[in-house]
Length: 331
Image 1 (tube, rainbow, N blue to C red):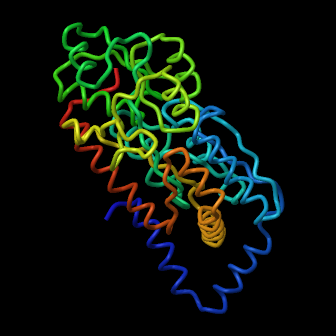
Image 2 (cartoon, rainbow, N blue to C red):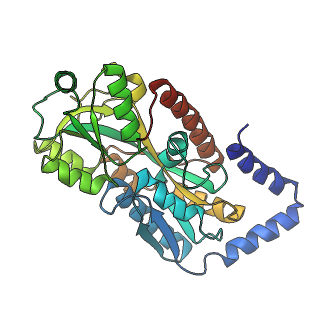
Image 3 (cartoon, rainbow, N blue to C red):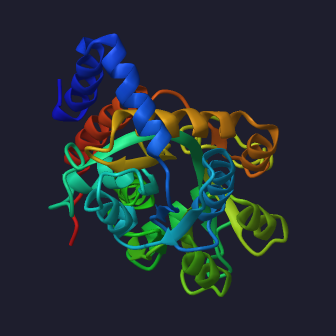
């Protein structure tokens, strides 16, 4: 058992061993005293992207439920690690939360020295959603399909440029997996998030990009400004039924989706973490939130914090195997 899971299970066991009356009194006091001031939610990506939109929607629901404002603070960079680093170093008092994909916890540690210890410095509060990853061609490339893109990359080594949300991001790992399996050279263009990456893609500053599904992205595809070549998802998207998954195309290991969730600094009182988990689960069950996510091909998740921790650990181990097998390194 890893330290990551052991910390959550020990916390649960400690609470269970306390006298019932004492536990009830302590947790009741925590819930009564918190929150007394606005809560800061650090979003690990720029404003305007899917994660930012969802975080703000959840922030509104939490504000109504908790009686205090939830203020979104965008801190982009390093594939989401900069934002989560701020959360990891914040006071464990329930007034700083993080909204991020799990990539900084499951990818970055296997590619270099992380800014924080993903096993000791953060508490996974709740899984929020998973988001399909689209591989899109810009006006810069003549490829009308994934096969044509690979043929172009093979014929002109290094000339195909692929923009991602950053070093050690999920898109970066997908790129390396595809390049390794397809025996092609593709040039990586890392950004700090999806907003500027999408704008530069629309102005054809590179050949392809990978980005999470979202209303603006789908709109640009349907308007013909971007070409959907493939998608990382369990199945084809309802909005783009003609676009094959990477698994269908023979790239099963690159067929990944982005998982997003809410995190708190390690040491945050259990009662506060449980309250946040319960309120986010309630929000995700509300029709307006579910419809907002599903309309953009994002899938709401929710569930217990300990299950989210297990999912993160399992994906971390799987990514470690992928990175070793593909000899992926950060240059």
